[in-house]
Image (cartoon, rainbow, N blue to C red):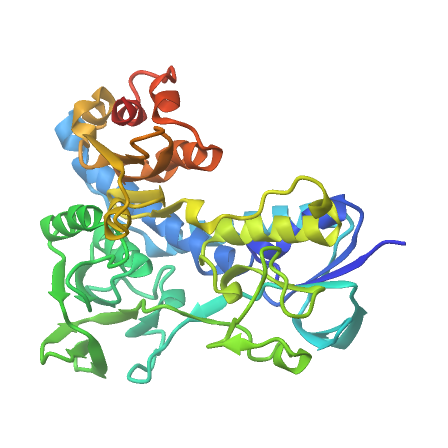
Length: 453
């Protein structure tokens, strides 16, 4: 008899878990209130990267004159960009839905909640549907955090979900929050023509990243005319006759046409019924999960943002796959658990930033001996051909064994290039394995090989 697997939330974790479990013989139901693909497709990863790509194209046109290309009359059409983003989301949602349906996964449009140890309720437009579940996955994601001092209106005071794109192009956008999301929005709007001010609560942007990496991004922001308010924490936003002003705790005031909140997220767990089942929450995140992503109730799993692990779509997707394998019993054979320390991540600014594994600063903070090699892209032919020699490759390895422990990349296509280092870190390869690879010439990846020599 087939196992009944009910998934609440059809984002990256839920859809991956559904396809794997269905392929392995489970009877799968996915409950999703918005679109297949979840917030990653509807509001977060896909729309933001589509806007960044549009900004990059806009910038490339502006820079083309130095490569001998004459251009005139370029302009950004917000309505066309909005249609482009909607088209991408629609195509991805359709293909994801078709895949699930081809595997006989039942998709219910609505909101799910756990009603008992083996019972899930789907609240739909036509009323509640009760489902039996031998295993349950909750992967409901998160939403932008809104501080008490701010009242987003979708017009002048925006959350990230109001900005793909906004109703009008901000003349002067004030971005509050200098983490990954904040710096991507700075780049996104500056590249399409907005003046931008960034409120930086610490003394560097990207406070959790390598200072050398952050310094490259800061320098590029300043070169582009971005104004940085360092060491300033926003404590208030007020409407003015011409826009908004953001008041900081050190007395400084930033005035602009719009303000954007990029200060973290809140997990969507309030109405799921998890605590009634005996699953503890901490700030909305599930307090405790094991390496199979099981909660304190053995057949109830969580994945994605609410798990409190790395809030990356790639991580959520892999969690979903591992959960499905565990639900279907594949863990009894050789099974590699997720190692979050080896997850690659990227920031889609210009230049792009990507890293994986052990960071140089963390190694030194731990007193760990490492070998660090750094190669600037300016030494590669491809960077000169691209007319963009910014950035570098940094490789961290064990000096005794030569095993690659981590790395950082700043520069064009960093998000793609980091995959080479991520593979080396995950597979335990040595720098000599990278150095001995016969790579394409000319290519930016040659800097990886040089860093490994």
